[in-house]
Image (cartoon, rainbow, N blue to C red; front, side):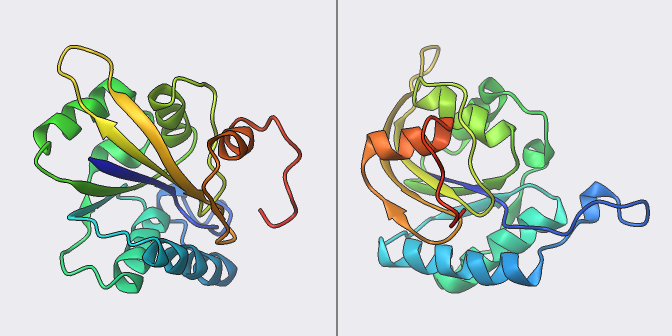
Length: 180
């Protein structure tokens, strides 16, 4: 299965009048994520399923993705992605949909970064807002899931295909350009 893990795009700050669950994308966040989605479209992304956290900013990000790549289905809300999940719980979900050949997941930090770190056997990882990590995974019941890095798209839409460069960005082990 191809698994595209996306952190929601830039959202407005939480405030006393706007609870975290209702934070929505900023104009800048929507604009930048459209560039990310265009980069993914050029990579030939063709998911059978797009799942999103139920939080507004994640749903909006997933909808931009679906619209940009002309996804024919509906975005599926997966409450598990709302926050605080552990990879073994998400793996159970993946096993339920093992027939899906390509999946987009839109969620939040630190959960999705932790998941990428576990899959690549390199923790801790962190995905910048609007960033995407694409992996090829092989689910193995009762065993570790095997993952292979395919590419990464930064929150600014830059495609990174080199595994080491991507890992350095995900782990913060190199100076990040101002693009992020």
